[in-house]
Length: 325
Ligand SMILES: C[C@H](Cc1ccc(C(C)(C)C)cc1)[C@H](NN)c1nnnn1Cc1ccc2c(c1)OCO2
Image 1 (cartoon, rainbow, N blue to C red):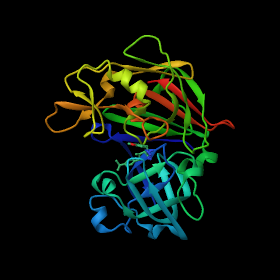
Image 2 (cartoon, rainbow, N blue to C red; image 1 turned 30 degrees about the vertical axis):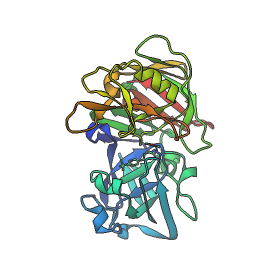
Image 3 (cartoon, protein in one colour; image 1 turned 90 degrees about the vertical axis):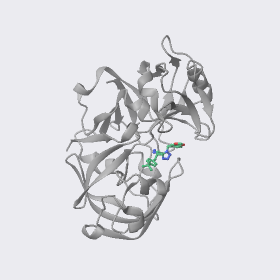
Image 4 (cartoon, rainbow, N blue to C red; image 1 turned 45 degrees about the vertical axis):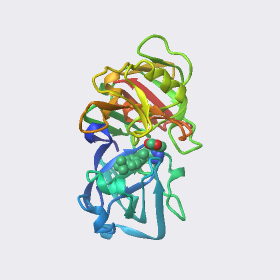
């Protein structure tokens, strides 16, 4: 089987939500290549926490008695609950008995994002949080039945993009795809990014260890790289209240060039201009921030909306393919 699903941006492209049939209900889920749990708001979630969300009704599923899940994300949010097996359909691709993690508790960040009905993890199943036995991601559940064991991400700035499962649509990218091998030891689509440049010119230095993470809004890079970037933005400075680099919204940001698999990709300055920090619209928060405390770099949506990415398990070593959109 193969299929395509729309990835609809929330405000400021903070995240991208995709319609997914879970049991007999269609939910809007955040596809997250940086985590491995498929969890949903459900009729088991306290009403005080689930107002405004679409809810999975586990009555159509089979309860996995004694199975629980509890996930904490790097931004401090989290959720927990119980586990059911049920039908999940993404763009026509069907997992007949997918582990569906029904939330019985969610953090305030999830309560507040009422468009988000849960996450669909697309990292490696080794980091699924279900106890006593880790469960397969949707991709792992359907991988064997896909025309090709791969999926692609084609996210866009302020417009609907797509995730494709089982095939590469060559109309979605230009030029050739350059591949890098993935190190799955931490359960992420983790690889080594090479040189970078600010504005234009030839790349140098090394970004280093990074993950391709559709579930993270921004790009988190080494301090040295981020300082080199904002040195080229006159009005920029580090604002500890905002927790990152801010600048005058009126200032044009330089492009950011990064070399992956021997090919240089350009993230345009306009894509790096993330969002105003308040309603005055004077000061803006940058889409490139420091990876301090995270332990690796994260190429999140700010980067991913510039490229076409292949999450490829056609070979014994998984690999990532990057092409210009
Ligand atoms: C944050 C997302 C997971 C998420 C997505 C959406 C949401 C809301 C809907 C409530 C907005 C919360 C959470 C990310 N997914 N791989 C993730 N999950 N675990 N680590 N990361 C990446 C990371 C790690 C550290 C950091 C960070 C990011 O931002 C700031 O510091």
